[in-house]
Amino acid sequence: QVQLVQSGAEMKKPGASVRLSCRASGYTFTTYAIHWLRQAPGQRLEWMGWINPDDGESKYSESVQGRMTITRDTSATTSYMELRSLTSDDSAMYFCARASGGYHYWGQGSQVTVSS
Amino acid sequence: EIVLTQSPDTLSLSPGERATLSCRASQSLSTNYLAWYLQKPGQAPRLLIYGSSNRATGIPDRFSGSGSGTDFTLTISRLEPEDFAVYFCQQYYKLPLTFGGGTKVDIK
Image 1 (cartoon, helix red, strand yellow):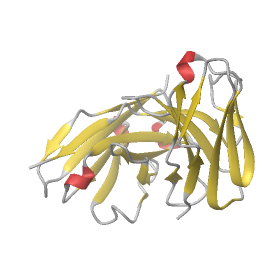
Image 2 (cartoon, rainbow over the protein chains, first blue to last red; image 1 turned 60 degrees about the vertical axis):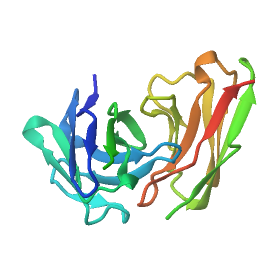
Image 3 (cartoon, rainbow over the protein chains, first blue to last red; image 1 turned 180 degrees about the vertical axis):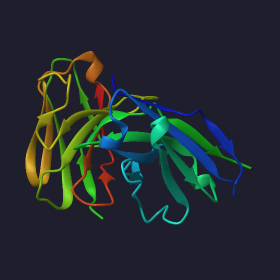
Image 4 (tube, rainbow over the protein chains, first blue to last red; image 1 turned 135 degrees about the vertical axis):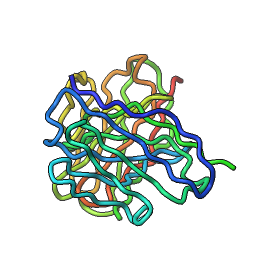
């Protein structure tokens, strides 16, 4: 069965960077784009960016452009998301999801807390 | 960006009742690339409907989606206890992909 398994919770100080992973299984990794999204408490879900695992092409929302990098390791069937220059506004639950006409499969989420 | 406005914010209903949720887009989703999700506290969202009216795998037929252009509706024909949750819509027609603010369906 299709599974997306994310790395664990992270606690970071302002100005630091965080790197999260999303390991995919149960399907051909290069067939579907992986998207990264986040949800802060009481806020609506925010789309952050996506990567085409086949060729590594990525695209980002304007709100994180320049601070975020999405990569993939096809041999490990894993996508990575790095977010730099963290502020308290980046505290949220981060999700990866497989895209194919809506998000049919989601990771379990990785909590990121940014606090001094 | 396309703004999605959901209404109502909260819907208080009893099990067995019908729920009707609305999602309005700030511009036409001409391809009907509109999805609905259910989310419970501490969990990832779960896809219910994609392409405005297509049920995702394993979703019971009491859930149905309709609409086109800028106005979309999710209907739950008879609420089951496990249906009380937050529902939100998402457009995947144009980047940046955007989500509605959600409708909470709670027990009356």
